[in-house]
Length: 359
Image (cartoon, rainbow, N blue to C red; front, side, top):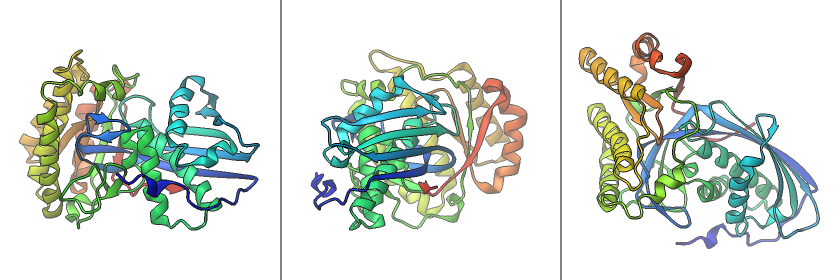
């Protein structure tokens, strides 16, 4: 794999100080990535909708200092210094230092906030680490002006992946593929790429209502979950299934076959949870209200000939996916029927977005 393309090969013109702010989105995988090898290489290809309203806003102040042998940074999350978050970010800087040697030249002060609950299964690491990657690339593009916008986004996705695999899919949108796949031109295990084919209009403005069944910390971290795939009895079959489903969903997205979209997306969500149910040790990530919501969605779909469907990440919250032409009816259904299964009746109405935005 050609990681040398991301090394800094030209002289850098250091600047005394700079500040950059990026808003980067979360994403929701349609074909799930579950299982990886080092360094953050996926065992199967995945594809996700980039979200719009669920995002992280991160500001990094860079101040030039004497070059050191360690990365010097302070971290504030939602206005408070968060020492407990620092080890993960320190590990991220350690992984990217070979590709971003300038991190040893600056003191960094990071201010970050989410538009959604942290660590509740809405891919907060995806939006958070992609935001830091975009801030790093803003600095790099200023001290190395040879970079094109395409180069910046590609390297930002590459860097974000080293912190969180799904973060590679949060730089661009509306559909991003991560993982090398023979039928997706330009796809790579090293970074995410925009879905390269013309998408049927039905999927262009797709809706995602995130039902907050459980806003607490996840029962098991994604890293632990991925590691459980190393000796999983069904791992190889799962990886093959996911890659086959990527082929299928590519055709579905181009042709607009929404009934097949519903079947595949729900099957992928349930398969992800089946992997956790059959791992050693095993986990049940769904809550009773998750199952209530799923059954209500199935009932509503049958009774109303609807194209509503659900997907899940590695947690209890439910992403309700539906085309925009059903927005009014489905939102009424969520408010009247599904919201009672959410913590404090809370849910987030979101839609497909276009990726990172510099503020």
